Picture: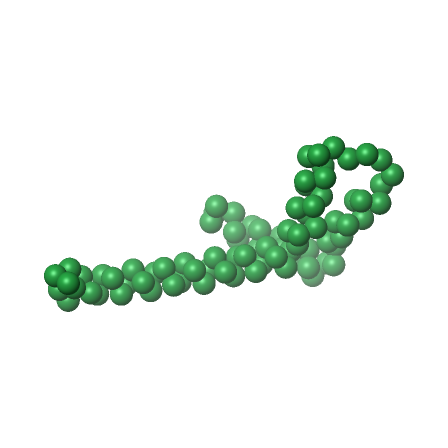
Length: 84
């Protein structure tokens, strides 16, 4: 998944800059929608470029915290914390 994040971030930023994200217009077509189409359109209205960027930022913050916790664990083990 993480290999896709740079591309997703670039696409989301370009979409925001261009002001090109308007998924709600899809509902204006006068026709019936299949359950799969309804599910996709409902997802697309929530999976906005801003939401993608927020998820990427949250993922980065969580990775940073994970690395900090691993460093803390390793420091404790090196200092004899394994005896606790």
